[in-house]
Amino acid sequence: MHSHAETEKISPQARKVLVAAGVGHFIEWYDVGVYGLLATFLAANFFVSDNPTAALLATFAVSAIGFVLRPLGGLFFGPLGDRIGRQRTLAIVVLLTSGSTFAMGVLPTYDSVGVLAPVLLVLARMVQGFGAGGETSNAVALLFEHSPRTRRGFMTSWMDGIGFIASVVGSALALALITLLGNGVMTDWGWRIPFLLALPLGLVGLYIRLQLEDSPEFRELEAAGAVAESPTKEAFRTGSKAMLVLCGVLLLKAIGHWALVSFLPSFLSGDLGFSSSQSFTTTTIAIGVTAIAVPFMGALSDRVGRKPMLIAGSAGFVVLSWPAFYLMSRGSLALAITAMLLLGLLIAVFDGALSATMAEQFPARIRSGAMAIPYNLVVSAFGGTVPYVATWLVATTGSQLAPAFYVMLLSAVTLAFAITAIRETAPRRTPVTPDQDPELIRQP
Image: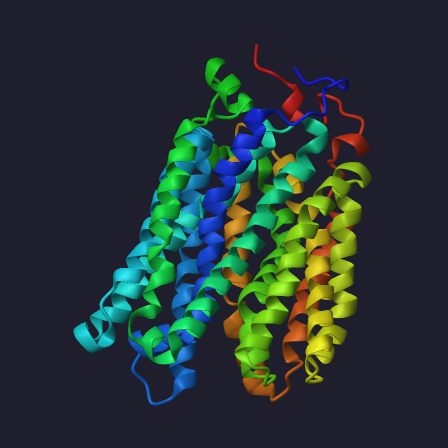
C-alpha cells in the first residue's frame, strides 16, 4: 500500500527501469534526428526528380507515413502492455524499432532497383512507426509505476530529456559524417552508417529490458487476477473523457517537440540562409539545454503541481512564438540561438509535467493503452506533419514567419484545455482519497 510517509528514495530497481525505458526511447528519437539531417541524401538516393524541393518534400512525406502507423501501433501495443505487461511489450517494441531503422541502412537505392527503392523505404518507415507507437506509453507506465509517488514527475520527465539528447546525438553523428566524408561519399554510402548503428543499440536495449521486473502495480493486478481482459474497450468506456482532454493537451507537445527537433534545423539552413554548421550549432545548443532542463522541470512539477507547469508552458508559446521566429529571421546567429533557447525552455516547462500528467489520468488496469491512443493520434497528426506543414506555409504565404501562427494556434488550444479541463494530479498538491485516486483501491 502507498502511504503519505512513503520514502522519497528512488530505488535501484527504478533506476534500472529508467535506463531500460531510456534505451528504447533513445533509439526512437535518435532516428528522428538522423532522418531529419540526412533528408537531402535520402532524397537523392530514393527519389529521382529534377526538382530538389519536390524530392525533399517526398522524403518528408515518407517520414510522415511512419507517423500514420503510430496510432495503429499505439492501439496494438498500448493495450498489449495492459494485457501481458509493460516489460514484455517494451522488449518486442525495441526489436521492431531498432530492426526497421537498421533495415533503412541496408536498402537498395533507386539507381539499383528503381521504384522498388522508395517502396521499401516506405515499408521500413511503416514498421518503425508501428513499433514506435508502443514505446512511449509503455515506457512511461513502467517508469511511473516503479517510482515513488511524490517523485513521479521527476522520474517520468527523463523520457523527454532522453528523447532530446537522442535527437542531438543522431544529428551530431550525421553532421560529423558529412564533415568527415564530404557530400559525395555521404550521398554514395555514408548516409547508411547512422541507420546501421541502430541495431547494436537495439540489442543492448533488448538485453536490458529482458532483465527487468514488470511494475509492482501490474504484478499486483496479475496476482489478483484483475488484469483487464480487453483494455481498449475498458479505456474507451471509463477513460474516454480523460483521453479526449489529453488530445487537447498533447497538441503543444507534438508541435513543439517536432518543430525543435526536425523542422527548425532545416528551416534555419533552408529558408533563413544560415550555413549547415550554424543551424546545427544553434539547434544543438537549444536542444541540449532543453534536455538538461526537462528533469528539473519534472521535479518542479512534483512540488508546485502539474497544472501550473502546463499552463505556463502553453501560455509562453502563445505569447512568444512569433517573437522567437522574428528573432530567428534577423540573420544573426546570436539572435537565432536566443530564440531557439526560448522555445526550448518553454517546451521543457511543459514536458516536465506532461508524462506524469498523462499517467495520472488513468488506473493501472488501462494506463498504457489509454495513454497510447491519444498520444499517438496527436503526435502523428500534428507532430509528424510539422516539417511538411511549416515548409508548405512558408512556400504558400511567402512569409518566413507563417509557421509561428500555426504554433500559436495549437498552443492556444492546449492552453484552453490546460486551464479548463485538466485537474491537478500531483500527489503533493492534492489530498489523496480512494474515490479520487483509483490507484489506492486494491483488489482483495
